[in-house]
Image 1 (cartoon, rainbow, N blue to C red):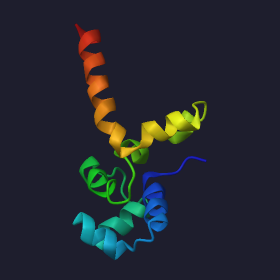
Image 2 (image 1 turned 180 degrees about the horizontal axis):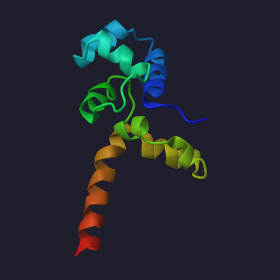
Image 3 (image 1 turned 30 degrees about the vertical axis):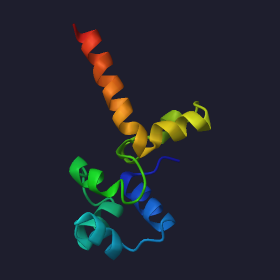
Length: 104
């Protein structure tokens, strides 16, 4: 089942036993905006907001934005690596290097 960004944020927040008020305090995003994000009331959630929320709920921006059903054929260990916040910088750097090599 494909989860929306809002559903993923809510699920992760609840797993951390965190209220919307706490998330608001830690991210600087108002409770009303966070509530609307979790209810998928925005057509598109600005990546800046996702980047503010992700580390607080211990998820990567990639995890929140990616349709993880596309990863079902990969091993659990690889999926966990791909979706950790720590891997984001490495993956971005690797991708940018690859892109430079393939554009020229």
